[in-house]
View (cartoon, one colour):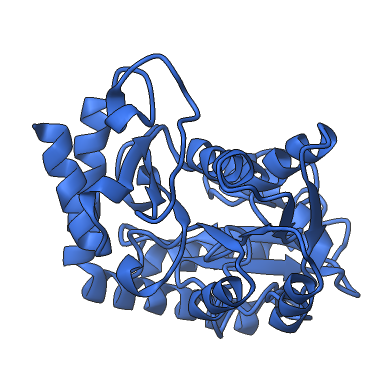
Length: 331
């Protein structure tokens, strides 16, 4: 009963039918399930994605391509990191085989937002299946799935202060999808295995709280991001920002670019020593030394040291001041 009440709550907040909501272990499982379903159940033989997707999409697409199950192509990027929608349409128009378009609603590193309604309209025009990784936006924006005309979306609870290890996959009622996991009748035969009761209840409650406080929390977080942007520009000459940071972008993410120098090479390591949580790539890569595939894909003329700062309702102006102070001292 608790699980079904949670399902109804989540469906209501996303303006979907409860039968379209399936609980999973998180965004990675949801992305994998959606992509497999598009290939196996919906007959997609070509996938159009972008080089700046989360690895949960890119690695999954590469896996099926390596098995000769599908072909795939990347849509071009504009200079500010947004998807080139003209190129997307050209690719869709130029293919006779059935396509899956999988593009994230908001990029997890630079924060750029996708024009979902435009993409869904293109997918309908060319009879393509549309999946979107909405991990960065569910819980941070009001989402009305009844108006989005989309086949699959993925979301994860910990992105809006819910428990880790729980997420959802939305499957449009018009899609006849088969399970990724077999062996039980859970989730209406769509996901075998004992359900994560506490995670599911926590996911629903966290989403309820996030949407109840959306107006005040989002306004506060926007002020934090704007304040940090202003302070960095004032105190750090030469600093830049990656992506469309002050345009169509997440209010929860700021991706900075510090000029390469002897002092900036160990920047992320030194920030970590000072108790400041920042990553050079996605949050999953925090502390990792490899470069960001997203930043590399932007093909910037002057690639500095990238730092991904994330903001939430629990952060303060004083913390921003401390970050700016430490950064100024280090550089």
